[in-house]
Each structure stands twice: as C-alpha cells, then as structure tokens.
Image (cartoon, rainbow, N blue to C red; front, top):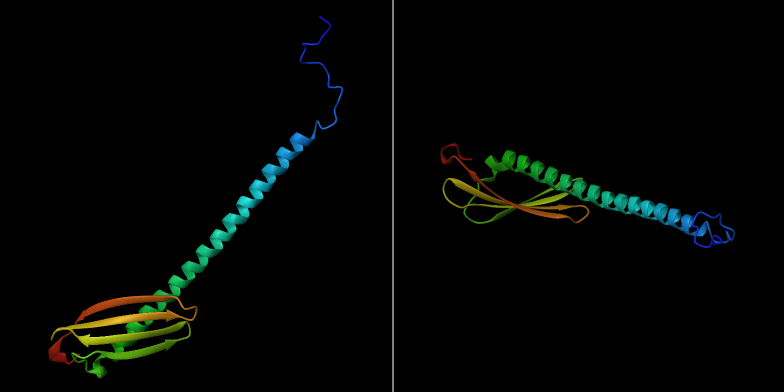
Length: 132
C-alpha cells in the first residue's frame, strides 16, 4: 500500500482550509452579538413598562390621598359626583357616590401623560355620625 489510506498525511492542497473554521467563528460571534442586542431591546421595553406602572401607581396613591383629604368637604350623596385631580405625570378622574349609608364607592380613572390607563374601584367605610 502506498499510503492512500493513511489519514495522517500532511495536507498538500490548503486552498479553502481556513474558510469553514472562520465561517463558524464569525457565525458564533454574530449569534452572540445578535442575542445580546435582542436582550437589550427587550430589557429597555421592560424598563419602560415598569416606569409606566410606577407612574400609574403614584398617580393613584396621590389622588386617593387628596380625595381622602377633600372628602369631609365634599358631602357625598347617592348620585354620582366627579372630581378631577391633575398632576405633572397625568390626571385622575374620581367618580364617587354613597352606595349605602355607611359605604362610599369611588372609581379612580388614572391616565398618564403617555396615555397609559388604570381604573381602580375602592369601597370605603364612612362614619355617618362624624359627617365624613
């Protein structure tokens, strides 16, 4: 046998020998870079949504606090009444009425300046003797 079947013979024709290895290496680098950019894009969207949720919750809590402070002077009735509170991050529309002699039902409609919306209904116990 004159060495035809020996697999350890040195390569004599090296044209194109590096291309498959370099292609594989560049494809791996491209996939890693693409994956990192996609993860960054998704993370940016997630952060934006979290910020919007924080704005919505802050507006809701601010409006609830202001509504509780204004409640003694409002004299709620069984008919629906509407208040609007404006803040730098958006506005809150509060619709409230007496659902019974001891319960006040309020609906808070929160809208941020980026047009995100949240609606929350809150039922509060009131004390009829103290006129609240």
